[in-house]
Image (cartoon, rainbow, N blue to C red; front, side):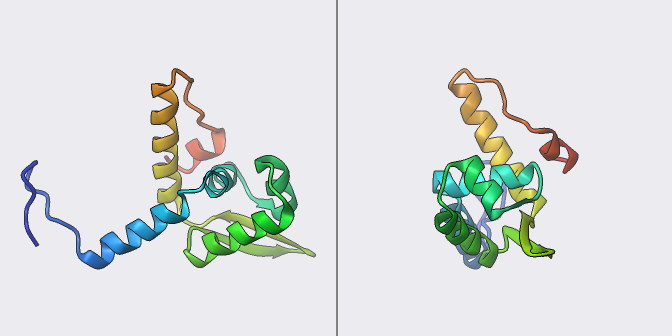
Length: 121
């Protein structure tokens, strides 16, 4: 591994960069990013998420399946409902930082929901 010119940081291994790129790729659609943002504020079922993000049930369900396979969200059974939640608080931190930074550039106040603050982000 080589050191970078800006402070001696070592380059991460190729497999770590590939995993990071895959995670960023999954969050590259506004719908998936919105789903993760919504789940960062609290658990929800597919119906609640579809209403919140303005998507159809099948579309939101497909997005959740991809996010779940990537380990970004998880689900649990609650009676007859499948409830989804963020599986990685660090992802919440990255999403919050990016959204808040872009909101600030556009002159909007930061959109920090209480649930994200509770996760220590």
